[in-house]
Image 1 (spheres, helix red, strand yellow):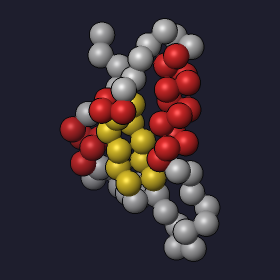
Image 2 (cartoon, rainbow, N blue to C red):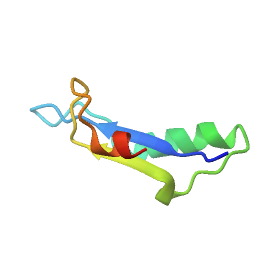
Image 3 (spheres, rainbow, N blue to C red):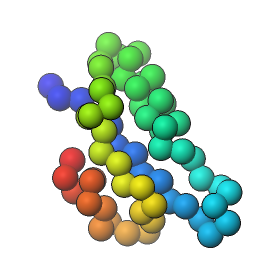
Image 4 (cartoon, rainbow, N blue to C red):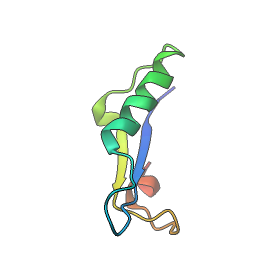
Length: 63
């Protein structure tokens, strides 16, 4: 079984209300750890500054 993580960050216009990619990765790694899974940084697919309103997400498609 291959375990990977996916993060997407959508920045709003004032750039104040968003979660960081690093925080999302930390949460995913923590979740994986509780199941004895390991996810390395190279195993993450990240769509940075991509709206949640579109399905045109390059890294999600690659994943």
